[in-house]
View 1 (cartoon, rainbow, N blue to C red):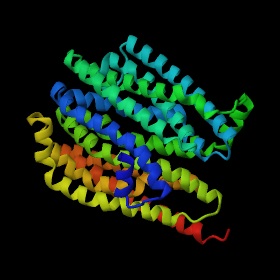
View 2 (cartoon, rainbow, N blue to C red):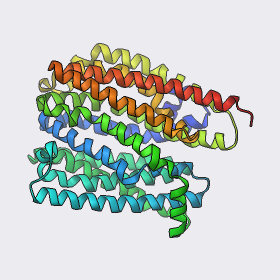
View 3 (cartoon, rainbow, N blue to C red):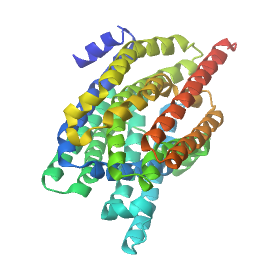
View 4 (tube, rainbow, N blue to C red):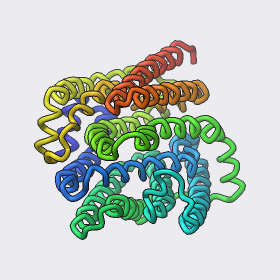
Length: 428
């Protein structure tokens, strides 16, 4: 039923992208619905300050995952054949494991010697959960790449639902037990562990070939552009995405950071759900189309038109009703979230039009050029936050941060369109 309704909503009946995106989104919709509904309880068990510390915790993870996998999980989908895909996946899994061990060793030494820096020190023993979470998230992304390559979207959806359900239940339990600071991050780690288990239990059904050390090294070298250009780009993007929590938290009240964190979570979760599902499906189909020399513009345009048919009215309603809805749903302690939602909505709308197309730089081997966009984005975001700090306004910092993010996505969307036009005009 979920699959059929999503397919009809996208107005792409019978289209393979709609079926596959809807299958992946069906499970993810349930997963995100569980997670978002849990916030109705979590915001009454945890304070804005608790959420601020959790946002700081997760900001470190998003950055460190890039280091632990070097984005080789994306090469799993782009590999020429199953043997090469398996080899690069196993290389990435081993690298992720060793780097996570190094991170844990460093975190233990810093914690035991009371040398944890900045907001990391404020997390206390919770900081020791960062390396295990990095390992679990990195492994999950590599597994997802293997399943995505063979279009096994049911398993991907099942993993997402397990993550959301287990994580939400444990966060609520820990909140009821009074485990305030540790409850949110610990529930997240255990939920991700359960999600990984779903992938592992079904891995044999993929019937992956055995790979030798030489094959793994050869595959890693073949896709060296991923650690050379894609990983630095994603590292910079993750770092700039975490700036409000890693930087503004030093200058403004933690409660304000928590309000912004809730607004960001409740708006970008649905957007990222759609972006992630569409990017996974479009990446696999567009890569196949390019390998066969077929045009891909019609596929991309039809998908984005369908997305905007839903996104535009939703964003307009969100702009008008944000403040009363957030206060009603999450309680008076969270009054003020609506202002941040309004600041984020233009950025969210543009992300729905550009983020699902980020794979185009991989298909056309333009990672170096895309990397320059994200260097510029980091500089613009840092400048926006610096202005907000200078004028002493957290809201100004958020508005400028969201504004420069939106403008960069607009430029990226135009560049992606130019890449597709150039490809389709080139004789094959």
